[in-house]
Length: 233
Image (tube, rainbow, N blue to C red):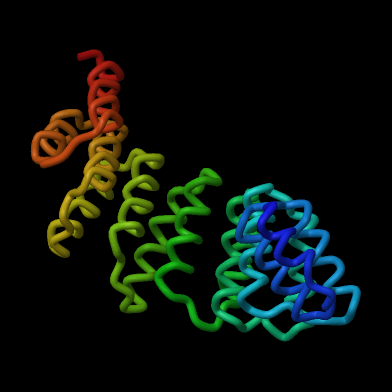
């Protein structure tokens, strides 16, 4: 951050453009206090942050689980007319979901006019992390009904949700879908599937996935060992 202060500190300009650049820099660097301070100064001079700055500020609110600041940023979003901007809407969903305000996250999700794979994945993960894995899987089905094709990140999120739910029948359906879509079981997805089957009560299928993985890391081995321990083997 010394470089940022040296660079911007040498400038005399302190108008809206300067402040937004400064705020964006702090947000990207994770400097919470200076980011919020600059954001406050920006709004005080009646300037409206752009759609490339607000998602960074919302990400900081998410990381700090600061719903109060997040609500203030949301007010700026409404005032600036960016409530329909895809990137800003997704950042709002993510911020609320990670802050355990899942109902607010769902409201923003439902109000988002254009939901892409990232938006769906954020909402699916949010429900799982808030203890409602069943709704995560319902959303996954809805996402596919909207003709969106998941990527590996989405599938890891869905597999983790199924593990939390402990539903064996759903686990087999998800596994079949992964095979149908020909996803390659990399370390992350493979480990998630081992964990899913173990938590759904089938350590043999967990071992089958484990043995079929070309690459394993320490976490993979730990998950498999824990599965045997949990099931008394």
